[in-house]
Image (cartoon, one colour):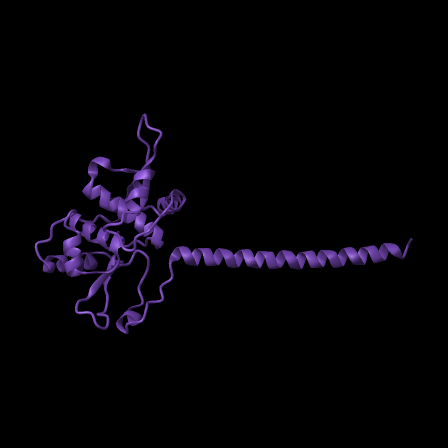
Length: 228
């Protein structure tokens, strides 16, 4: 996506998008995915970190948000009442098959070493060496204005550096380098917190208006009593 900004994704949206990308590459005959197939894909016990138990409502909400952000499209098939969904990464980013494979693994498994990326992307694209994985990562980072991934500093006790996707925002690199858990804020969590704060403010305002209305009513009743 040259010279453009794209919105950050929540962890649920990341899982849904990653599953759509994975199934498009590994099971093209079953793609685009129905809602039921997407539930199964998100809740797989293998090739996923963390393992989750999403219900349909959770996935529908994530799909709706991804559609608004332009990452996912609904596909209506003639003669079928079942909606299907496909990702829009090709149109948005124009990535090669190799880059899509790397991004998919990062979305579905979190931060990965070069060796892990090479091994775990095998079904989507075959990298000859870990050096070829690194070359792809570096080349894509240089080609687009807003990077899709970042090399993390080596954590204490770890021998290899890892890469992490940036679709959910920048990680706390200093915290990782010092071995403390990074204080990242999920965009969805931040959104809910802001909503709760607005609701609380509105409730406070309503209570204040109620008190003012009661005071006015009491004053009016007292005024009427003077003329009775």
